[in-house]
Amino acid sequence: MSSTSDDGGETIESIRSRHRDAAADVVPEHTQLYIGGEWQDAASGETFDTLNPTTGEVLASVARGGEADIDRAVEAAWDAYDEEWSETSRAERQALLTEIADRVEEHQEELATLETLDNGKTLMEARMDVGGVAEQFRFFAGATNSQSGHTRDEPGVHGEVIREPYGVVGQIIPWNFPLAMASWKLAPALAAGNCSVLKPAEQTPLSVLRFLEIVDDVVPDGVVNVVTGYGEEAGDPLSRHEGVRKLAFTGSTAVGKQIMRNAAENVTDVTLELGGKSPIVVHADADPEEAVGVIAMAIFANTGECCEAGSRLFVHDDVAEPILEGLIGAAEGMTVGDPLKEETDVGPKVSQEQVDRTMDYLERAKEGGATFLAGGDAPDDEALSNGCFVTPTLVEGLDHDHEAVQEEIFGPVLEVFRWDDYDEMMTLANDVDYGLAGGVITNDLELADRTARDIEAGYIWVNTWHEMSPGLPYGGYKQSGIGRELSVETLDYYTQAKSVKYGLD
Ligand code: NDP
Image (cartoon, rainbow, N blue to C red; front, side, top):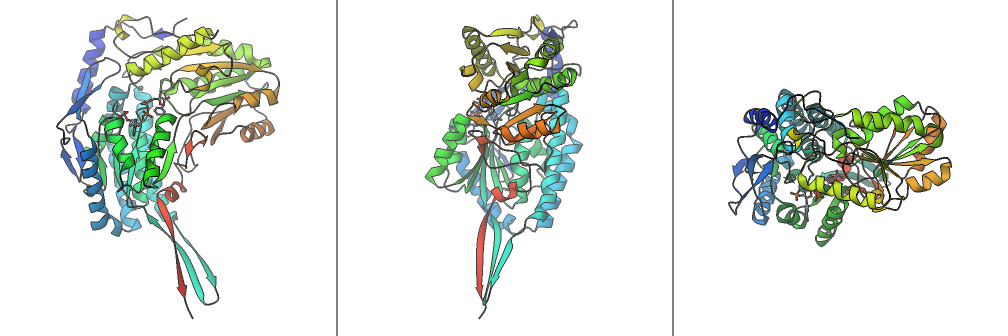
């Protein structure tokens, strides 16, 4: 029942050798903190290792930032804001963001390779991510021009609303889309006129550091500051800092709640993009072959490490057999292996900790009576035994209130439920704390519209998944978050309204 692993004569050593060669070309020269436009050691002088999840080898040692470094970074950001950045025009910010996009495109292959080495995603997925990074900066370069206030006139008085940046924002990002998440945070923050202190995830700091090497000469000193380190040591003080006027976070709901509690101390505004447990609703009229393609992409892309992954499948009885058969074939036919190889479909998870977490859920699912239709184990290939691999997995027979169904597994694990009564199915589809995304597969426009409206989530796909071009707001209902990213309205989350009233008599 396990998927194809790409042994092709590979050994642990041949994979390691390929990765060492790639790393020699792309790992950044600077692995310190980036504060006030300078590379600096952590105040403690300490570092931590970032590992390659394919080989288990150390890629680099990175500065382990802490509270003193966050203080320095926030101060540098305010200096930059007060001395220069708050005076920039829209046109200047637009030019900067456009230049950043150009630089990212020039370095696309190098950044993608680095992302693959540090995160484990396939090179194809990493290339798409980096393309999206450039797109993000270009989108917000344009969006700066759509920022506008409004006026309200009455006899003898003129009122106007202007929007002003917060000044310094704190941004904390996860490891599943390291550079993409950095761009989702930095592009709108800068476009709106803020300076940033950004904390990348401990598992994947390298692409953000290389990005800063690439744009160092175009971004004014202190406008972007990066403090690498652990959540408790660097993220926590950032989220509590009095000098931070706005917090933006992507990650787990548990940490999101902690960030929100910390933010309450200083009444700091927060944007949170948290977890998901998205339902895929398949109607009786769905074409099985097309449905299988959409579903496999929804759950297995990026090794299932997507907050918007379609992880609960609600398939109508009439099409369940052919679709499940197709999905088993798709899962077992995927090539699990070295993400640097073009033919690989599924790379490793980001860390052993994440493998253990997924396996723990699968163990509990087994105890809960689940039937494994595919996967559920590590690939049977000695060459991959040092990596963090999990095979694409299909599970059926769990109660919907089981913890493996209710909680985010964040791995290549799809849970299957069959239905024939729409209302009962929709009750279950919405019976989770999350509400980030959802999807529907049908050729009936009315059914698509009804289901899209019935799913309690912030983003719905019809006959597709993961498509998220900038322009449509992205964010969650319920415990999946607060605020919206990816769209013009994101600028509102990085600015505050000021009303000005003129007495004219
Ligand atoms: P976290 O929520 O812990 O990590 C996200 C970011 O928050 C990282 O930069 C992390 O730092 C930081 N962080 C952690 N603790 C704190 C804190 N107390 N204060 C401030 N910042 C903090 O996710 P995990 O990496 O632990 O993953 C756990 C689960 O979360 C996953 O299995 C998945 O279910 C979910 N998740 C959801 C994501 C999404 O896109 N919605 C993304 C990632 C995870 P550091 O990593 O350095 O500790």
